[in-house]
Length: 160
Image (cartoon, rainbow, N blue to C red; front, top):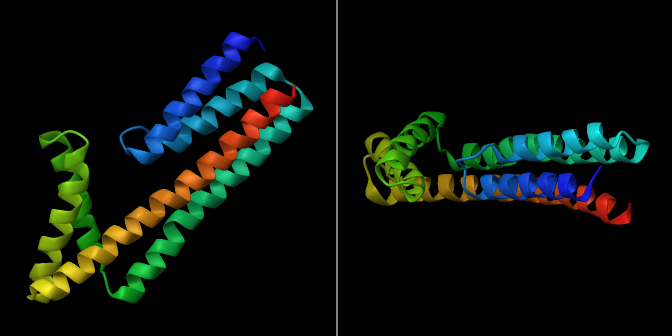
């Protein structure tokens, strides 16, 4: 594979990493697809081993990013409906205030749903804070998996 093509794959991976942090782009999917294209174009056993390792890291982080924060939210008593309300409000917020509105909308929607459910500001804010921490943990887990997968790819490119 030419150096220019590898640079293009690297650029797509960087865009994917940005997409993990700013959930506008499908970051993990972009990273997976870029490494797949690289493996197909390279066609070596090493490239396919790198693709398998990167896929493993992306899949494991994808499973853990839902399981671990979800368990923490259940133990804190935050119901799924509040998260759905926060997610929907976040989507609306994204279009009202690009990028930042996603986060603000999630917080506002979750808080209002919890305030309606709990009827107390302090308890609603505590639940909202648990939800925000869980979403942050989820993003960090996904970012860690994406960084490891990207690092495996980069190490293989530098080594060859």
